[in-house]
Image (tube, rainbow, N blue to C red; front, side, top):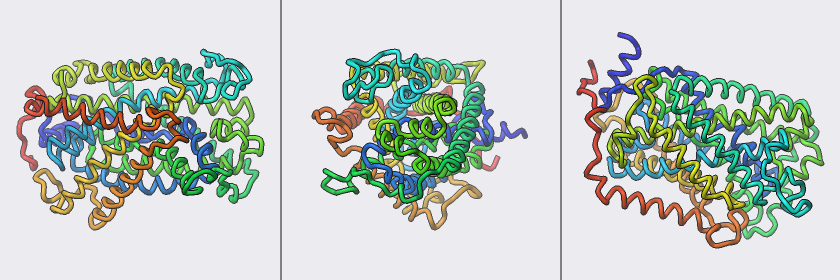
Length: 519
């Protein structure tokens, strides 16, 4: 029997028939998770925040976040082995917590994915104007002010910075929508090329930084006076600086969400989840450490505004620095493409369970390309609407980015808490669809699961803390993330318990004939 037939029959044991194009191999599965994390995207887009709020010593928040996220990733690796289904968090929650909990977690996770698409799309603003001033289409004024030292390079607090970022974001979302409609083959080919370029670019930067080291490791402990004014001293500043690595190291479950398009996913998906996070985490830490040691004194003075972008130009010079920035721009695009694809799979998975209005349309798969077109367009339209809503907001970057991370961490925590409950009941052996011979944590399951929960809860508090320094002085800036999260939960409850709950169930056209596990 062909491997694809075996995978299709395996999928049938979980209740669904094969509809998506199962063409992804080991590297494509790894690339899906790695491109979502995308260290070049997250680090170049937000590294200035780490330097701004916690100085160069913020780098030590990186290994802490990597450890915490690895505890979460281990849970997801185990889940992806047992439940290789499109929709990852939603499907895993359904298996370990039931349909009610799964629906709410799927709803929050879906909102997180859709919000993250525009959050990453605006990342071109940090890079492209540095490559060429023509990309700063919207100029700032008056020139010489604190937020507009140069009309082509406004600071992130200037309205021109946000508006131009949103304009570039419109373009990126339009492109990712078209590619996601074209099919997983084209998507994976572009994604693989982008990941290869990012791996080469990140490794190249690490080596170049090492060659140009000017300072010893002691500079990695420089707080640059950022602890002043914090009631908790430097620790208070470091908590804000930790938001930077928090933004980078998530989305590793993407490999699990593409399981129905991966050959032999029970083996490949768990490896891809762990490999994606570990590779990105180690390379990212080396990148930021060696970058700090390589930058000149002049470059160091500007880190709170330029971040890794400024380090790259400072170390490599104007011309070669721009070459690497082009690679970063490609990485940002591929990252946005992967996040868009993830959101599509969540919509598709919930649609075929009739968990959302218009489920039949959301779960329809095009005959020739075998891709859910309606979800791809839906995600694109909503992402563009979010960008348009933030057009006049100079803090659009901070608000959009923070909401995406907060919702993602809430979804992760909602799953890991329920998984721990199942572990107490004997998971995975206590559930009928458990399998032998799969990736498992064994006796480490309890320890890592508890660590994942404690870490996740702490980081949610850190992210939602209404700090003036990070969110701004106005009440809706400080409390906006908490209020928006609350509103999304209320909307979710209203949709589900307002009539959707009774309709949830796999639509007939997506159901597979019952197949015995041993067949």
